[in-house]
Amino acid sequence: MAETAQERTEEATPKRRQDARRKGTVAKSVDLNGAVVLMALLVATPYVIGRLSSSFGQSLTLGFRNMPGEMNLQALGGYTWTLLEPCLTPFGMLLAVALVTGVMCNFAQVGFVLSAETLNPNLNKINPINGLKRLFSLSSQVEGLKATVKCFLFMYLAWTSVQSHWPDLVGLAWKHPLYAVSSVGMLVHSIFLRVGIAWLALALLDYLYQRKRVSKELRMTKEELKQEMKESEQSPELKGAMARRRRKLAKGRMMDAVRKADVIVTNPTHFAVAIQYEHGKMPSPIVVAKGADYLALKIREVGAQHRVPIVPNPPLARALYKQCEVGDAVPRELFQPVAEVLAYVYSTLRKIRKE
Image (cartoon, rainbow, N blue to C red; front, side, top):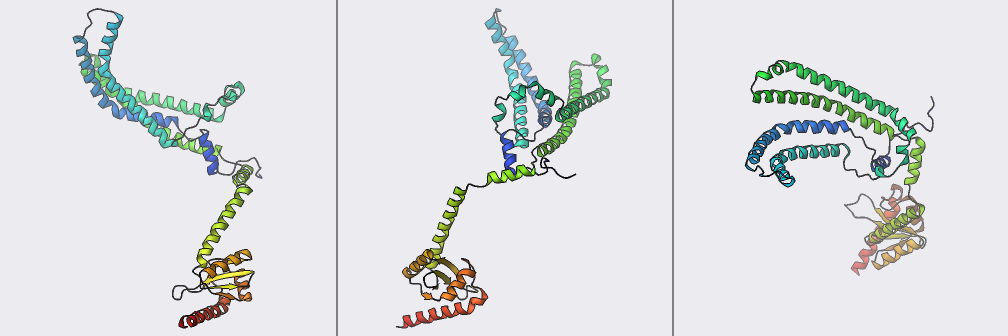
């Protein structure tokens, strides 16, 4: 089927991706954040539980020592704070682990993005028709399918973990309380560990899916690509100003090069071409400056100020001006006339020095 103008077949340009980031459209998996935070908490929990047990014992000791003499609201509040204060540090550590891990995982996915556009009021967000469209959209169906798969998978993992520990659970009533608590803790840790590993695997797949979805969503039509290229072009005024500045800089560099030239070939007034040649360092003479009319006059003036020989040779000046750009080597067909001019200049300079 022939491609229509509305088909999004072109990959998003860097500008479109940057604009999408400013609007908050980025590839991000919420499941990946949750899975990584859960795994981090499972790693930190054994250490925190050790701290929590000692803090709980400390709370009981302080509770017995600081029993309030009379029961009023102020005394009861102070007593409650005395009991809870030692346990706040372990719980604060768990909260810090969850917060830092979540922020780092989010930063690893999308980088540093601050978007205020998603907070702007938008009536379309509360439009019932748009809400129904989002409810039955492909994205909502995929999210619902993911939630169903996660629910059944986590239930299955929890049930198989309980089955593997069932013989120990049946006899807990006749075991020592510490052993019973340890057995239940191992069961809970086993369940969360299995769920965390499965959740992490699903989250990685979800992140790849989100990247592909956002990339497809940001694709552009050929017309949009052409329009963006037009918008990115500079205004004629700015382009003209930049061109004038480039020409000014180029003229300045040319005038500096004229000072080191060996000879200036002229027309004698319309064209001027400055040539430099260093024997043993350059394979052939180089055109270091050229100009017509007013620029030719400036080249001759700078050359005269720095005592650069000026040789009128209209045919050679016209040929060099048309065939060479600044920085080009002299063409092979012009070697002979240029060599004759240089030889004339060098011989004239030697005569002047002898005199």
